[in-house]
Image (cartoon, rainbow, N blue to C red; front, top):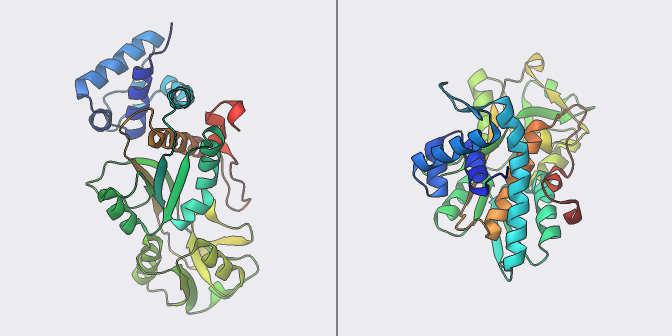
Length: 309
């Protein structure tokens, strides 16, 4: 028995989007064709891949198992086709993301792509999510990897993480009646979540530092003079988490979505997107601990052959 590549791609797309209709839109196929491909794949392996009849489309245990293999198989396929057909010459992939995500997540993804395709030119533009989505709409970006995706843009949710309050480990500044904050400048979604939460609970605060750089916010926190809110995967191990016991309200989670212009499965944009999807799939499955600051390293590289690492 051989696994059909088109069936695998349909399966991965449905699994990631949790919708047959959205998968059909992305793959430019009618929904019935996508359903038939999934059914044929299920017959081939002799097991159901999705739990049907529920309110949301979820994978079965066999589906979860197959998904891990399917991501690797598709990555291998796209790398081989890209290299053999030499579509990678003089091609710039323009990526839009936040300064925080560029710092925390892009290094692993870029490393995998750069090692496999040295001629691939990657241009990264960092900005707040609203500006990035506007550039994507205007056709100025090939890929956007950020939060707050507008409803009119077709994107895939890759990763969700709670925003947490933090302060330098030895600092007691959080005990002040009026809490001094270090935040991103106006226009950042994180800033809005923080201020809304504090205003909603009536906790007094003042903004003592604001800037556009993730490194700048972390540097301000390191002084011990400010409180801020960050994603656990972006935090420095010198920070400690604050919660309701210290008077800080829950902030909710931030969702990282991926939108890309995949005109061809062998295009470099498609390859970069596949590597990103594999990286975040593994990140979702990996244990993480903020207090211990243990996060998976180079997880994206496992999606491709040993020779590319």
